[in-house]
Amino acid sequence: MHRQTRWSNFRRAMDKVFIEGLEIEALIGIYDWERRIRQPLRFDVEMAFDNRRPAATDRIEDTLDYKAVSKRLIAFVSTSDFGLVETLAERCAAIILDEFEVGHVRLKLSKPGAVRGASAVGVIIERTRAEREA
Image (cartoon, rainbow, N blue to C red; front, side, top):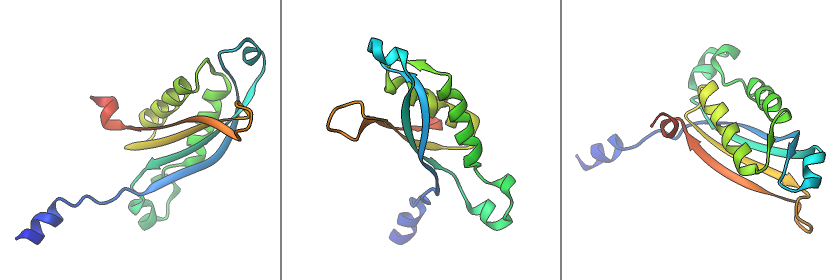
């Protein structure tokens, strides 16, 4: 009985679909000089998605289309105008959760060269669809 209870509480770990190193130029920053130039940003995105169905069907229609996610982020970020990377990261996570069949997203937004001596600075956020629906 103990074993049955233990296994009944087990939740299958969700598969991840990822986009690594997506570079997008954007107008972002709080300083005057930052407001005049476009700066490169780097996105690393992990999205929870059950890959069993596409693995079984071998059909693109059943997958989480990472190209579509990438194109959507590029379109949004390229035309955005935020002061903070925190704000931009939140908006990007919301887009992924709202527009794609993703239950959880982990998004790392890096701003290369923003701090002398560091290769990049930025934020890492994790959000869930359940949080958005609450």
